[in-house]
Image (cartoon, rainbow, N blue to C red; front, side, top):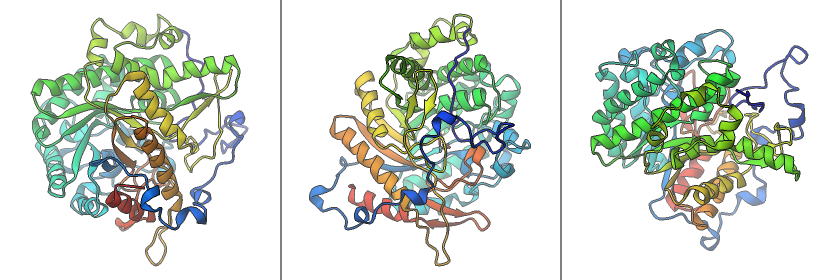
Amino acid sequence: MSTPTRRHLPRHAAPPATAADPAGAALDAEALDAEALDGSQLDEPADRTAPAPSPATRLTFPPDFGWGAATSAYQIEGAAKDDGRGESVWDTYSRAPGRTRNGDTGDVAADHYHRYADDLDLMRDLGLRSYRFSISWPRIQPDGTGAANQRGLDFYRRLVDGLHERGIAPMATLFHWDLPQTLQDAGGWESRDVAYRFADYADIVFAALGDRVPVWLTVNEPKTVVQNGYLSGHHAPGRQDPDAAYLVAHHLQLAHGLAVRALRATGGTGRIGPAFNLHPCYPADDSPAAAEAARLYDGYENRLYLDSALTGSYPADVLADLGPDSRMVRGIRDGDLEIISSPIDLLAVQYYTPLYITPAGGTVRRWPTSEAEWQQIYPDGMYDTLTRVTRDYGPIPLTVTENGLPTPDVLTPDGAVEDSGRVTFLRDHLAAAHRAISDGVPLESFHVWSLLDNFEWAEGYEQRWGLIYVDYPTQRRVFKRSAHWYRQVIADNAL
Ligand code: FCB
């Protein structure tokens, strides 16, 4: 196989250190043509904060637009040993020395497992209409196979019932990266069998919650597992093996398709789809070489997942680049693509950043970044991503299931958190989503990442992504300025 030569600017990670550059400051020298900004520099200019737009200039969203916020189990729940929960790859990875910032783990996180009822009240106060959360596989099957752990299911039943009581629609992700460790020990996503174990787990969850969850998402960001878990290695399971990585991509897609079929087999009315993080890939210059490089980059970033799920074939340019001897290409069996492309009801899109591709197939930065150095702030990328999906794949209903940024939030003595950078970011990205809707994109809901500050994977607790501030020593929650702003947007159904 020809190992892809693409260099990845790793998601969720500080620049890797090198011997000559212990702090990692010189990573990707060609990329450093824009200064990183912290959130405070993203504050809106005074003339953009006041006064509120008149009704005539307001951007009004469709009636019943699903205003939401998102979380995932390992990032907020804590309670790592409660009620029979098994170990996940993220327990193992975060506890290993040197893997996460400050050695942080999700053992306690935002303690949501114990505080979910209060958190549900906060969601109600925010006015949410949709809440996207994930179910922890090791709570349901502590060893990844076999009988269900009823206490784990009961937690999600209470959560889902509490959402309904407050008029909030549940949206449940089946897999947000916390693979049971026993399945990792048996080969993890390199093992085809794990895709079938995932379908068994999905069966259990559908039987327990299928009557109460209207929308299911199968696999969260398979690309991040591939790139961070198996290429750069700064996510669990921490591998650096390109040949394994794309076999993992295939098995994650297979797992998605098998879960779709499992839901259909229940005969229930729930809707289901995958959650892909899409990165628009723009050529960094006008040269034909940059255009060509951007096209292949787009294949790895976007079409690998979109084409297989929506058209039933992997992109030919990516397969050719991987080569016939790659483990992925050898691992595709007859019928797999029919399973992967089982009809879905909606597609969940997560947008954070664009990528600019050089003629040599590298990346450069074009826009200021957030505290997450991989994230360039470019709201038009939201518009381009949404319209591209509709243009290339047809009018499948879309939901944005993640969009947001980390800001350097501080709780002031009088109990306020002034994250105006987040207000600006969300307003600009929502305006781009509104423009896409106006141009015909069937976008039905939008979920801010994240409801609460949480465990941001390799970054631990340092980056704060929430609308709601979490004071970790006390677990006190405080609405940030952005939460107050978002509540008003929801109440107005308009920006
Ligand atoms: C996404 C992940 C989510 C969170 C945000 C910042 O890639 O799905 O868990 O880490 O990025």
